[in-house]
Image (cartoon, one colour):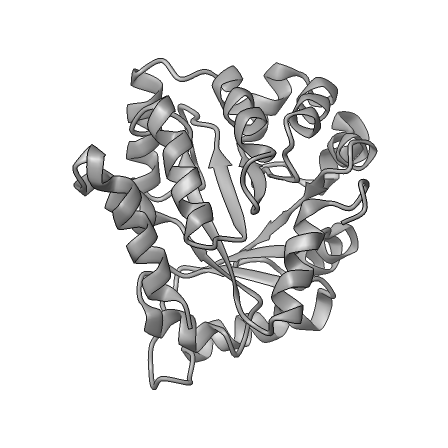
Length: 266
């Protein structure tokens, strides 16, 4: 890998060469504890995960479902700080083979300082940022994308079935790495079929985006991945992992995560 090559590109190339679907998993920094967050990420890496979203907990996570929202609340109650996320990233980035990505809300980035946040994230070994509430229209005043580019960070664009054609066109223009598609609909139907609403949504996305597509549909079973592998490049496993962590005895979490993620491989 070239020294200046973004690790997201490295992992995407591995996925292409091996002709398989990629996996992105999700952790909330500090849930259930800081030290356990580290071992969970290591377990995910052992299981072969390509990308790990390290979510920086925030008090008003408008884009999260109830499972991840509760995890954020628990983490904040334990006193987790933004600095803890940088510490974890710095410790793990040179150790794990997967690409680490910060997921945060713009209020966190803004308070930290956009320029400093991007510089410190890159220094800690973060490959990309997912900031779902950072609209492109505010770039002229916030310079978020500019600072990402200057620090070789990929600002992953997030879209949903509610995204209009004009929003898709605008986001496609700035897409780096991959595009993260969220959806309310689940995977249904026969083994190699996809709910018509979701399929049409993905067709719209592919019409505008040249980068690989990551999709989160409440993926929790191998069958979901088997369905999605014909349509997308990366399966996002978020809430299912958080729920597993929440219901599992702490000393068994790592092995259960490895077992669960490996059970999804197709």
